[in-house]
Each structure stands twice: as C-alpha cells, then as structure tokens.
Image 1 (cartoon, rainbow, N blue to C red):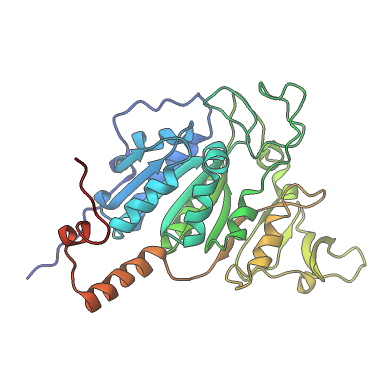
Image 2 (cartoon, rainbow, N blue to C red):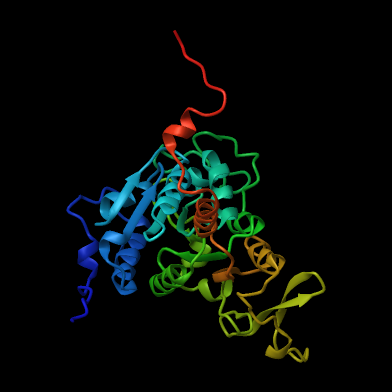
Length: 342
C-alpha cells in the first residue's frame, strides 16, 4: 500500500490567466502576491480553497486566484461565505473585502459572522476611501475628510475595524500593511493556522483617490516611530532607538521613554499576550491607533480558541438525527397546518 502525496504547489499554481485590472501602483497587487505566495505553503490541495468577495476594488480578488470562488454582491460576502463553510466545513474559505463593502452595507453580516466564530479567514483591505466608485468617503475615513461626496469635509467619526471585531468576541484579530510583505505573509500564515474566524485588517494604499493614507506608517523614516510590532511574550517597544514603550497604568495604556534617568526599563513595559482571555486587553491595543503620540500596533492582537459555529451546528444535527431518525422531507412538508390553493 502506498501513501498518496500532495503535489508540490508554487505561487504560479494560484495565478490565473485573467488580466489583473487594478490601477498601477495599487496596494492590492502586493496583497495578491502575498496570498498567492502563502497558499502553496499551507499543504492544502488547491481545490480545497474558496475565495469569496463582495463588491469593490478588492473584490476582484477571486478572478485572480486559481481556486474556487464567488464574486457576490455588495456587503453579502459574509452570508455566502458562511453558507459555504457550513455546508462544506472541509473547505478553506477566505473572504476578501474592503472597508466600504464590509463596514457599511455589509456591517451587519460581518458582525454576526464574526460573533458566531465561523471558520472563515477575512482579509479586510482598508484604504479609507471608496475607490471603485471614484473617491467617496468610507466608514473608516478620518473626520473632516474632503471627498467627492463630502466637499466640505465629513462630519462622521471613523469606525475602528479591529475594535469592532474585538467587541463581538472575534477569536483571531490582527493587522498588517500591504507593503510590509514579510510581516503580511507571516500574519496570513497565523490566520490560516487558526480554526475559527480570523479577521485581518490590511492597511492598503489607493494611490488614485486616497494616496498616502498610511504614509505616516509606511514611509521608511517614520516606521520605527509610528509602528509597534506586536510579538507574543515580548515587551512593547518601539522608536528609532528602541527607547519608547507601552506601559499599563491602571486601566489605561501610556507611552513611556526608557532611560533618561527616569529609572524605567523594559521590565516596566507591558508584555504582549495575544492569548489573553479578556477581550478588553486587545480592545485597549486596538484603541491606540490614531491617538496622539501612540504608535499603530500591527501583528496579532488576539488569538484564542473557542468552538466554531459549523462544528456546533453539525453536532446539533447529528444529535437530533440520533434521537429522532434521519427524517422525511415529504412528510415534513405535509405536516402541520397545510392547505390547498384552488
């Protein structure tokens, strides 16, 4: 008896013959390249992958992935992805969406998919703008943002995607950046290894309608001062000279300077625990973004294990069948209150 071995897959195996139709310089290219590079490493047959999207620039993704896929309608990708995962739990379901698609019209679906802990990997591209419809403000656009739909500046306060995900008890929450390729690939690997809902916010540049949205993080000279790399079990240190850190002071996080005669050392800093059972911890980390003097954390904010929705649903069905038998659809349809239309 011989044991079948999986063929060795490469990035090319996940590329299609479709012309990639994004604007030159769009951050989506970098994300596509990262996903196509990581999928072959996972040891999963290509036919086990399903990529599902909604509407938007990011939602062209399934056309460029040589896997099964669905290009659904605006905001409904979580509903379709949930249906696929429930009926075929053996499949690896990845959902690609944008800040407009998943946080505006699709916000309700996104919330309930995440709270249920359906085993879906969500890649949420956040460029803080509606790119496909030519530059209107989105749920993540900053207060006062001037766009075609808000010529005098938006009066809306932006939503914090990671805070939202943590607020509904999502079991895996992370953030990366389109141009931080090694970091993005490692984050994708960690999400793939997680059994429940995995939500990754990917900060992505739209060089046509919102160029430089994340310049303060991606500009080479600014990265060390404005980005905090979260590493499990390690103190939260940042700064060009590694002389700044994050400390927990009561119920608040604060930025502190190490040395300078103040007696503060690494031992005084908060040590990152991505497996912390209390979501309030990860929520504090998510709230750092946008605060004056605070860096933007990237990496895994939260990763913990809890029962998946599809597993609980399958067990419930098996238990009912064991008690009441396999059932009869015809009998069910003709039971209860029925009537004839003449």
